[in-house]
Length: 411
Image (cartoon, rainbow, N blue to C red; front, side, top):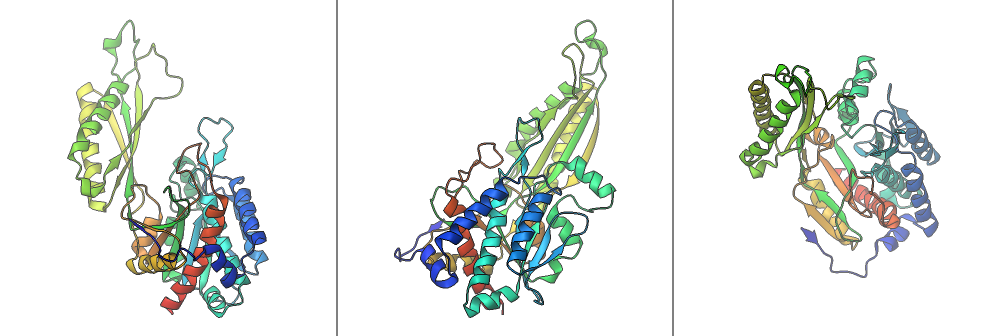
């Protein structure tokens, strides 16, 4: 639902100028920083250049930096302050599809998050107003690694080396007790709505679990003696059909999503009956019970598909993220602030993607601000920032203004 505004004469840039001393030069600086962060796209738990660059920006504002042991990321706060509210941003990027060099791309807009929390911190720091100065004393700006749930093998290696205990950044910070220092968490994420300028807030997002299936058959000459083999690919393909048929059993209110992917070992020949086949899927849903029920359905379907072909199966169940739930009070206050600034406010009831913000929201009152200025092609090599001012400057102003009001409400 989109909430319009009655006072069109209000302009967010003018509010930024009057309240925080925003200038065109500052806005251009935010765009430059956003571009620099876009060019530093790095994998989860490997965002070292991003960490160094962003930490330097916060140090330039006079913030004290607390780094995380064994992984990139940090907390920036005013020296001597006792923050109550965490303002967080993800740092990691996604692999660039089809690129064999190992390049990454910010195709989920995490470079916007880091730019915008810095932008808000800078606007509050440079403002001479009492609300801004007061707000800074109660805020911690946190750069978090590894939101995307990918590259699990390399993350398992980090876990085995004792550098991390969990496979995502926020789950790791939760286990380290970092979030127990705060009473609320404010996060952001790029959003794909068509309004040229807006701020959105999603009330709920799906959680997920990861399922990995290894179908094991028996190799044989595909032309001369296929009857002597057991085709693992056939068993896996039958399982994909079962997944398709199971979809009608999902309750729509549970927002269940599955998206299985079948792969074969590298170097397999068309002349050999496939001995091994792999299927991996997420099971996404709006509540944990619906997810766990669906997981059991898929496990049973996979086992049955394997048996019908004569294959064996191994199943690995990896916990993913909890469902996200926005705090109603924080959501309501955001809508009030955004409308007062003359910006369209989009209230999104539910979104199917998942985030480790779900785990945080189960522990602390949380909100996720949706950011404008992109073409909406998330997790796609065609993802682009289409309006730099909307992507990097508008959210910085809104976030600074919102944090002022959130501190006032909290204190």
